[in-house]
Length: 381
Figure (cartoon, rainbow, N blue to C red):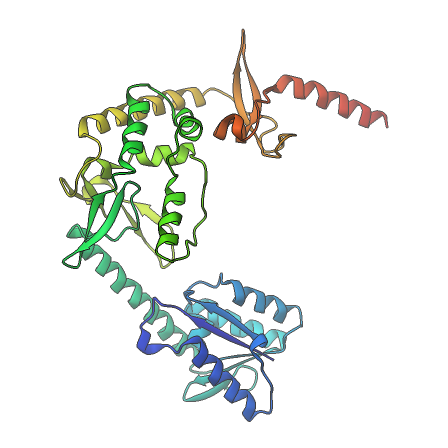
């Protein structure tokens, strides 16, 4: 006997019960049947959408039901089980086929017992539950679209800027202590012609500027808050790339860059003509001339890399090799000596330099020689 509770803050607060309220309703129903449910018998997904069935506690509970460890599941109503019409109906059939019971305390004017009650109208209930979450999603998208169209900030943080509310309108203000690192990154890329990897190594070895996630964690701690995201202590080439291609550092805000087609679906990039561009939105850190030069260099390098990758460079041992020192995967590279050859090197070393690991370049032809010897010995044995 187990209970299931779910809460989503995306839904209208007037139409769902809190977790504690759901637990109370389930316990009261269980007591009328002389069943005992303790707090440890509950599976709870807090702030998780009902449209997706990929929920941590829900998944654990279903595995135990299918494994025969749980015979009865009690929930407040069908909307707590899920708001995806098709998936909920399939789940109900699965419970029936397994002869496991799903009891919904406040459903269809009373309680609903999957194994014993008629379900002539259950499809209408599941359809309405899905229609409700889709309507909420549409209203949210419309609200966000309205904000994007009027240059209202809805994004989280831009490294180098602080979001401050002025007359209830969020505005971007330059963080003076981070301004030098943004300028330095553009200088190293445009003037010194360093690549993303080299710039990240320079920042990790010669400078003491915090990475974006490290800086945000420090600010959260100062305010007595917990930073829940993953913190990367060292600069990476992806961080450099994201900064170099962001127009926000020129004082320009661009919104409506992406749009999701389905609920919880993948975001699709929108063409330039559908985006909203606001010039002189805030104080710039980089001039537009420097930014445009950076984009020209990016485009040129991208074309060079594309043309070079068109050459056949299939790495036979891609994903199979690991560094013997640090355990990281080995990346496929071109080893340039007298003759350029395919080979492998420690990915951690290539990303973070000698502070993380060491150069372990090995030619692919040498690995093939050893592999042939291994196969020959194996055949003999």
